Length: 268
Length: 308
Image (cartoon, rainbow over all chains, first blue to last red; front, top):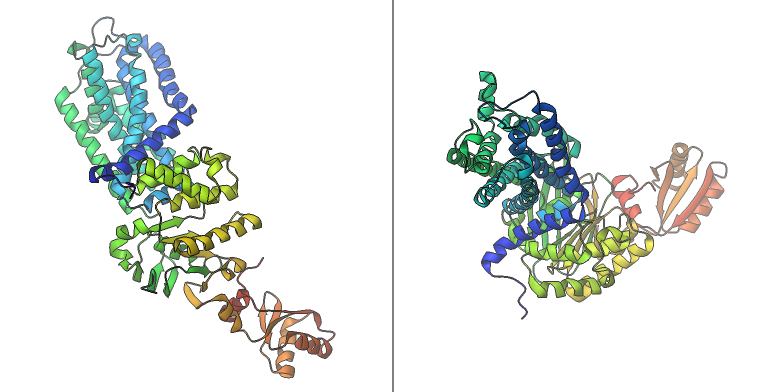
């Protein structure tokens, strides 16, 4: 007898791995997606850094600390957010084109389906975030290898949380237009208020509170802390590394569980 | 013969504002091709969704291979192949990649899976296109590739939703031949939904679905034999008036469907002649033919199946 079915552990991982692999292949074959998700943050960064650099100096930063450098981790967060969002939109396409239905009638649980989707979209977001990380010298950030690895690890965690959040929304949506509306209403403010764009110090107290409640705040803070591992002063007045990491992990787990629950409840 | 592969009993399903299935009961033995024939809105799609395990039944019971779908859908899925109305292939992947992906989802892997996928494509005559992207295939070939994908995990029961949609007559015929080969060579049991009479007539048995109820179940020949003789269709200037006159003169009950009168009669030619002679000014045209499943549908529901 020919061996067609793998051993138990692989049998568990195989469907997750194949869903992940499909996301990779699709991405490679749709190159315009790379342009869209990397191009926009790059353009934003250049325009914001140049435009606001003259009139805005981040509080707490030393002499010569530019706005372009301040906003750089925020732009990485934007790359992660946008890629995660664009990737999760494929779920809506999959449903409309009928691909998802075929996956749903396969003998695997919906949590495993969501796991495969989340890991696929996370990897795409993370890879593009890493590409953006290569621009650190241009931002004036001098990265040590250890800081680069730590930053990349944090980026994976943030990407996973954002992707899972995107999946919670995408599984409920029947149209891409609906997804865009929700994205503008929820995801963009989450990014704007995460400390990516302006620091929490110096804003009104009510806004400070909203920023504290924003789960992405801690992802961006952890990223700042890792980028400046050798020189913590430059990270500015953001929450410390370990609590930020812990809260980002909680964000990721909660978002994933919510995505899996949404998938289980959704009738196709 | 063994136990039936599909056993549906008293199946009901309601959406918020309407009942889609109102107590459906039928069974399908192994190696049978069973067609669920009905117009749009008859409940076909809901029945398909339940049998494909996408939607759990609301009340009544559905057993596939002896497993109750409300509790054990996961145990059924290894043996079930589902072909959706719209192709579920990823257009950005090649045909082979789609099949391998599907195999992985069903827990198959390795070179054995690839060989099986290629053999299935060969069997269905799409082997040469294995390495082409799905988006470059014609509609007919995509249907075959879709079927090949579903067959990779060797299902024992195949459930298809309107498999002929979007296919030209030639491709339709080919597809039908493939289903018969699956039944004969691979012992596969097949359930398909359709609104096409000629498609249903090629199946072993037909269930006629109307407003969520099966109004007739049987093999096409037996069903058609339940209509006596011929079916005569008469077009008249005033069909309502002629209906009454036919009753008075010939004692027969003509049914008014889509503006035409339909009468079942042991001898079509004699009846056409008699009507034409009796009411030369009223009758615009009269024709007779052997009964089809459409006539069964008319008899059961008072409506035509398909206003084509």
